[in-house]
Image (tube, rainbow, N blue to C red; front, side, top):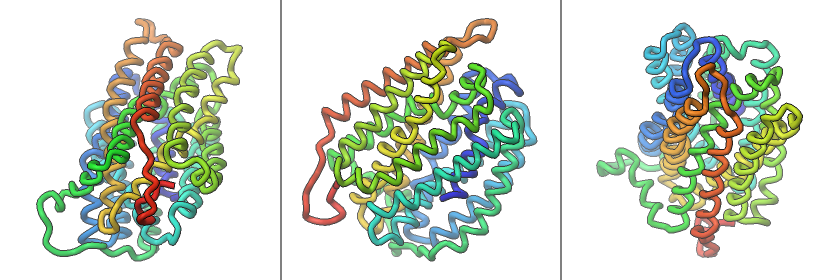
Length: 391
């Protein structure tokens, strides 16, 4: 988990600054490039989940994807034109995004009590993201290609380390239907109302999420914050704290209120960013960043745990892939277009951006999703099986 998220954090946080300041890409182009991870999250996780569930050991698939990804990251660091860079990063995303679901699946397969143990494992990913941000910020290389090269080097290390993970052979073998071959049987869980509502809201909340991932670093740099990448790691510090608290809070609050609090935090975060445009309210910038722990842990990690509870044993990788498809796939893809278009719309001819208005857009979106979730989600407390419990 540490290496998995170090790789992602090393290049993705500051890529917007590199594209916008060094390569002079427009907001729509930056949004499209960030959208490559969303396209990959739609196309690949379910298929990779199926392969790992039924044909090859998960850890071997995991390592192979990271090795190919390392080569693609290095190639990307040598490119400066939009077209070639876009397609190379798209190819890389097709390799990387499935590994998120595979990492979760391997963990869930080998933990005796995933509800309590998984957050303690996943927190190492957050620490890896922090380490990546501090490294990039300390070296002052946010507007260069070096973060891509660092990520490539760590990917090679991760590919080797992945082979040392616990053996996770396929849970299901034999002849399969076409739907099963594509991993589409994971969609059967959408027949359950609670899972359908969560899945739909996960897609919708990931649209405003794209604003944070794609443009916060550029926003902080244009606001005049020094070592923006380093300061953004405060969000991951809070993520560590809340990740460690999750086992206790999960049982006290339950799925519904954990997720609702996470959604509400997104609304507050974007409002703080919008209000912080005035230089006299810099504390609001830090408040918005620190809220990341609640935003991410309470919504996304809780959703992953809930998905694992609902999934049959033979579909756990595929269902994790389904959640990745909804959040980092469909939601972030739409969000990459919406965020890029919004930034371009509120950018004057001289290049000055109206950040206060820009951040109000995702704040409003997140508020609408929160209301929909509170009204529609019904928590299932059936004690019939551990897999069907939601708290």
